[in-house]
Length: 630
Image 1 (tube, rainbow, N blue to C red):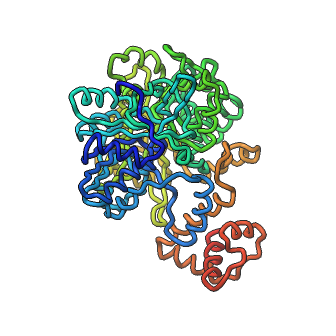
Image 2: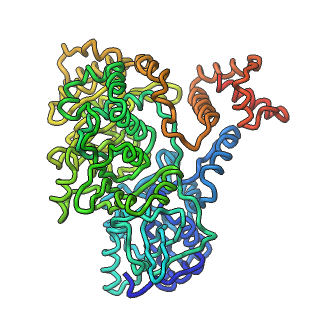
């Protein structure tokens, strides 16, 4: 903390110049993840270093988010208008493309502890620069790298004699770093703490509210204000709804909840709302899918089936918009002491409407959602241990994985060949925390299958060459076919319970593999009640509910149009099927058919600017889009 008020700059260039004058030509810059990253400011540091080899720049961050990319003309026609509408004038990170291409200048390094999911699988430079770090250890890693600059977007309130600052979306690592940086300052090391004001940033309370003297420099340029990164809501699949139904019956009234972003998080919120508001319908959906009767013992032992009389408290790394839906419905209402918060979160991320609602919410109401460092949300250790345990009654930490093994290990961040898909983030923290809490449980959700290169594959494996959560931390596993309570059970019991919620098209092969390895007895049989784990059965189970207006693709609305959702799904399906000879031949056959005269195709073709094709190339693209839609 500096001794007085920060020096305020009207632009990033003068702020960067002053920072270089203070800390010297070696800059180790720490910037927060996602929405709190001050992209324009970091871009200026990047520009200066790229133009001046005497500057050594290291950027330490995570989850650098970009506008959607496209790989073909058809993808461009779909993505560009959507990105312009959703992301507005949000600046693009100047270092991301050179990092991907291996074209960073020699005096610039970028290390991320969490990658944009799947974005860097084909980039050896990005894979080599990745740092595998638990979220709670990032501050330690920054200090080990001799970090000397913190930069992040902030919210600012100016009044008569009052200049108030908030770290807004991201107190996560910064709050833990500030006292460490202050210690280095007192020891004589030149450092700089920089805030870039953005009027779109919600002014959040809790540990996020800091005195103005926290910052050495503040950039406040109204011309540089821009929309925060706002990932749009995506359509929720039948599989995700089924997983969410299973999860919703394991949440204990009067307990604690953690969920993440994306379709599954939205589905879990939807299922909890259904349990609370339309309890009879919720119970019927559980029965229709078979999850309720098959896993009644788990529901009785772990969760419940009544509306939320006492309500929930949220202890979550990521504060997502679904928590506001739970709050408005009277579910997120259990206040914890001290402070009376209904939610503690480390960072927030969501669609534009989420940020808008937080900004316009009265202060006393917004203060119910307190932002904290990851050392508080993700860990039990420290002087607040007893308080944390008292607050986190019946904690249900719900996270996702790409694959799980019959031994109970979860694969969430990487592949067997060593490539990193995303990162560990805080998943390990919450799994370990669930085991440490007297009433805590970790729920790992995984879709039972996936399609890869036109082939259907099981996400339940006998074994896999990389794991994120080791099998000794196995707890509760969820798929769209039910619940496997694995805590404290033998290897044979774990394998049997996991097989019961695998897709039935893969159960026999997995069973045989487990028996060959001696992990299941030769006479083990999967009960008939678990032998109908098929997508069609779930579709039929939810069909009557969908006819009644439930379980829609976008139950909370979204920034994508119906045409964009349909086109995106069709293009992804075409790309997947083009990965096999059979799929390519089928596509050629469709291209040779006469164009259908279907009125429903017209708005879709118009959205791709192909309703009236110009020239041979656009006529081909029109046929491709029509084939994909058919």
